[in-house]
Amino acid sequence: MVKVRFAPSPTGYLHVGNARAALVNFLAARAMGGTFLLRLDDTDHERGRPEYEQGIYDDLRWLGIAWDETARQSDRLARYAEVAEALKKAGRLYPCFENEDELDAKRNELIKRRLPPVYDRAALSMTPEQRASAEANGKTPYWRFKLSDGAVAWTDLVLGERTIRLPTVSDPVLIRADGAPLYTFTSVVDDADHGISHIIRGEDHVSNTAVQIDLFRAITRASLPKFAHLPLISGGEGEKLSKRIGSISLRSLRKDGIEPGAITAYLARLGTSKDPAPVPMAELVASFSFADFSRSPPRFDATQLLALNRKLLHRLSFAEVCARLPEGATEAFWEAVKGNLELLTESRRWWEVVQGDFSAPAPAPEDMSVLKAALDVLPPGEFDQPAWKAWTLAISAATNAKGKGLYQPLRLALTGEAHGPEMAPLLGLIGRAGIKARLERAIAEGEGPG
Image (cartoon, rainbow, N blue to C red; front, top):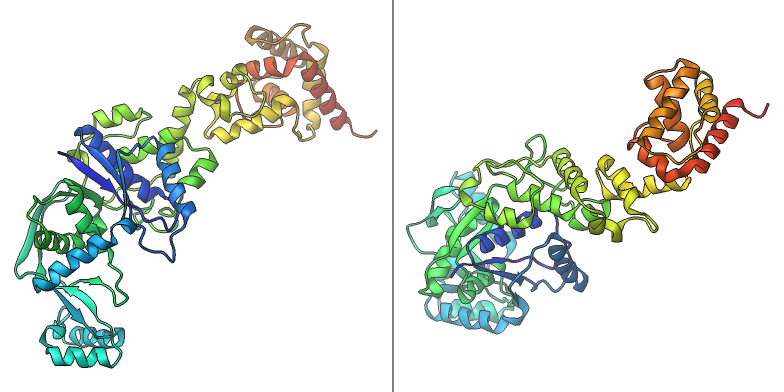
């Protein structure tokens, strides 16, 4: 049985990096007919917030990512304690008493000697009497996992063959002095207990994988999960994805008007051999393959994301967006403006234009003749494409204005913008009375108080 997991901590809102991990796990589960587990790593009580947890649910649903099962680590503390006791009895979990200053001194000494700064396992040499004396002096132990000798190798579904020699890695701390289990420990226990078959995550976890494989083998005889480590997203200049991009929250993208379908279409194929395209989730599932992912860090291109968003908006029907358009907006309005939008939030500005709630720059003196002629030859009926063409031909005949000299003064006077949607459908929405009033206002501003 295929089973994957996405395991965010409710200590903040989901961002671009989280979204990619969640999406790839979801696509893999659906493509292989498996189960998608949403696991909350919620043992950080100091930074965890209920609003962050709710935000995770809301953001995943907004993206169209549905989960089949849920779990939370805060419900499993007794299980972690049980596994820890078994590891202690097996001699794989041992107490340590060094403080940070002592550990730093050891690391610095090894670095000076040009040796790997690996923990020396000095605590394993302590006698029971020495341990009892340390505890009697007020020291509380934290617990390290004793790694096996030799190397750990696995075939990564993205990165290929990987081998890490365990002697080059410090025995990891699994239990803090206050008794709190740490991520390396809880994550492996959960993966084993929940039957996770594929662990899909960022390349920054590769160094943890050998440790987690060794720990996995120490606590269960179950088959090892398969691993897929995705190269981390970089910025436009190739730098690591940091606060400038990595902390872009899904909430901020939603507020800015980015469509969820644009985000999923972009992130699903980021770093793969397939070009991003505004395709639905079902098609992303059908075309998913680990073989498509490159081993090189992909670059996040905000321009490309906006281009996808624009293409997606152009395909949306009025029924799909009407609830998010300004109050009173009609299907005719949507059809008139959607081809000019990059973000849905821009529709509000064009609704204000249609309603007449805008300011226009005073026309230049050389544009006054065009505006006056436009008012003089304004046709009596309502506007459509033929009426717009006939009107502009009549204005041109009266003034000899052509091209930009003809159309720019009209667009500025009637919309307040130098660029925008096609004029004919906009003018049909504004109506003849509105067009007349706007021309009169522009002419009055151009002539001034005198």
